[in-house]
Amino acid sequence: MNELVTVRQVAECVQLSRATIYNLVKDGKLRAVRVRGRTIRLNRDEVCAYFGL
Image (cartoon, rainbow, N blue to C red; front, side):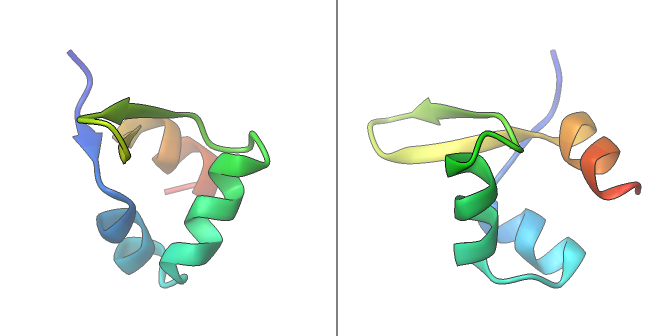
């Protein structure tokens, strides 16, 4: 199974705001999955590929 990361973890890693990460998800540039209602997680490999990490 792929590792899932939080919006906060992504934001800290790429030095962007959480709002920016949420906007990328909303715009369909990053794919996220919902867990426990409103909480979302992102696939670490997809995030790394998007940001070129």
